[in-house]
Image (cartoon, rainbow, N blue to C red):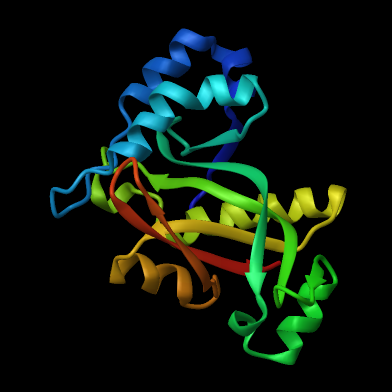
Length: 200
């Protein structure tokens, strides 16, 4: 992995000022190589990330390279989720879930407070051969979650992604090893999101 520094967005605001951070964010692009743009990823970073961090609704982390270029970002928060027994598939997973969750016999489901990777993207404005890889960005994200876990406990991480094979392949393959536990349909943007989780 190349050398990267990860900053909480409000820490960077304290170092270089809010206007400079906003200028840095304005150059972030989530326009994929096939020309498709993920406007939600861009809009959140530019319009909401600082305010959400100020209000402690979620915390955004900026990943900078050695040239102090914004190569990627991720946003973390925590949220309760319900996981049905059947999606765990193995007794080992069920035993692991019971370390962090309460099982409801009537629903046949576990209620657990989980770490949510609410936003996750690399910057496509960086030249292709200089971009952070998705694997490196996920490694940085999970390493930070593990640090937080050491301080406050917990052991379940989840995220939501659109139903695209390339995205699913990325999250499912090792070493990330997320698996689907549900789905959600957004009336606002007319998109079905797959809910993916893993243990840490």
